[in-house]
Image (spheres, one colour):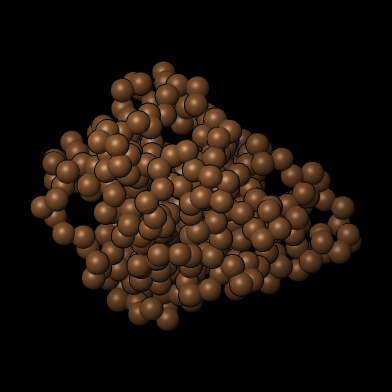
Length: 333
């Protein structure tokens, strides 16, 4: 089933069920007022939401046209947002960019950071920055929303807890990263609000695109209409979502409605921008700049500036945007 959260003047929005082609929606208010309420009573609500989706697809309910611009983040405020490091190639490139050659990559256990989850951005919200000199970067990722996970969960329990899948833009202010890390408490100012695609989908609805606890689809990124990257989220995964959830629950319980990110999607290659139509490219600017430094001795690709637009989509076999697109314009205030 495919779900979204629409604006209704309330902080948690209105839960709706979408048709398979994402063209229409019907309110799920009689089943659950919002997505968190549905997750809290998942066994009952999933059955009812699936039945409602079937009626919508069969034409038994006409529904209304779905406008992604009216969507909030699926969970506009979540109990927890945890981002992981599923792709070691991303860590290798970013650490090279920062010159942190003394630290070894965490290849035995995934790195995690706890992001701000009290105000998650809608798919069409702007990327707001307080200065043009913060090195504004996008990071295209896959994310899952979980049910409750007990402390010390194993891989099987972690995988079974995955309720929904989507994509996100984990915005980074690169100029503030080192300052945050050197202070010893991890990311804070360097990580503003994360934006999420308008649609979340149950793993079974993704078919063969969801297997081995990972999403096997290319994630396409465009900046100002130009292709920036289309790495496959199922390729070069060192830690899958079961691994990330197990690590997150190593010393604590995870509440129902926890969001876990897989880290910036990254495939191993030696391309530089601009890429060809069939190229792989990058899911963040920092990686592109690292490759440029290695190839040309200097970074040529700028970070985002005021007025730039970033579009992120996971692309299905038929060329469709599976979760709807994240489309954000940079606004420096």
